[in-house]
Amino acid sequence: MYRALRGVLARPSGRARTCVLVILLTATGIAILELVRQETGTAGFFVGLGLALLPVPPLMAAFRWLGRAAPGPWRRLLLCFGWGACTAALIAILANSFATEWIAAATADPSDADQLGSVAIAPVVEETAKAAALLLVFVFRRRQFTGPADGFVLAGFTATGFAFTENILYLGTAFDEDRANGTGVLDSLTAATFFVRAVMSPFAHPLFTVLTGLGFGAAALAAGRARRAGLPLLGLGLAMGAHALWNGSSHFGEYGFYVVYGCVMVPAFGLLLWLAVRIRRQRLRAVAAELAVYARAGWLRPAEVPALASVPARSLARALARRTGGRPAARAVSRYAADATALALLRRHARHAGPGREADFVERERELLNALWRRQATAGPVLARAAVLEELLPRRPYPQPPPAVRGPVRVPAPLLPAPRRPGLADLTAPEPA
Image (cartoon, rainbow, N blue to C red; front, side):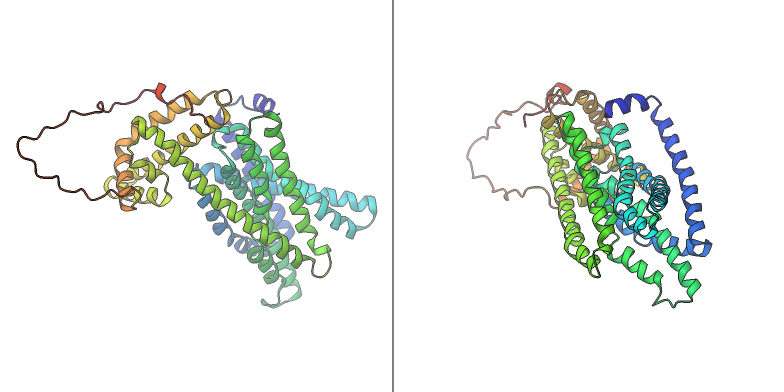
């Protein structure tokens, strides 16, 4: 399925695909904003926009924190956010409205149509629309999908964008109703809606879509075609099920919402938080283990490896480079760290998948090694300095003075040859798992 889709759609250049995507997001963004403004009124739209912005920066910072172990371009994350806020939201509103109206006309019961639409239709439509962004990255930017962490981050940004637009609609509608009824601020429907959606459950949509992202991340490491196709579908099914349970909680009785929130949503959020921390640690350990091979071959200084496997050390190295060389030097260190991390994850992927699966391993490795070699004069010293300042290097025992020796002292000949720059042949064959 992925090969067929890539063969049909991958003919234009990367720049052309980006332009098409930007045009699509702009058009759907204008359409969804106008549609929401018509539903809420102009005043309600701006109030909802202001309130819906509040939970966005913390959520984006949390998902960016997870992705800092292997930093990707901000452009890709913002495109995912835009897809969720514009394209996915527009698809969801139009499809949900059409389905609800069709069910109401078929059953002649608008209340049942709304309930069935929120539990059975909305989860399928919304999660599928959000998953489309992950599918596009998985198909056209496969190199940037190196594992569950990438699926976690991309899904989080996509769902945060979707929740942002949805919150504008709900908060703006509540404000318009409060203004019509003359309700006070503390007793208003707007305050209650903000508390439920932005304080109690800002993580709801990201939690659902992260399950799909984990499926795509696991598929990126899977060996067989069945797993590569089945794991994303499994994650999407779990996301739809969790979403349906959340939407149906208000129909489970007077305390159904609180039961689902306390017994399902909060534990699931805690589990995903623990999983995010573990994924980040495992990725940093993989960076240290794989880059040690290149350090032994001479491509990296040994002191660079622990610094590249530590996010605080990377930040310190950028600060040191900025003091001496300004922003260009800091950008060089950031690019160096990103390329080194990509190299480590490429080697790990090739080791676990086998040479037949990673056909472009040699070419991609050559590109990354050349990029590292060009920036090593700028980034290497500050990374080594950061490793010393962060105390990441192993402690050596204090050297003892040599014993007194009478007569001339012979200096032994060196036991190891002089260091050399290794060739690519030293590293192209992945180590056995």
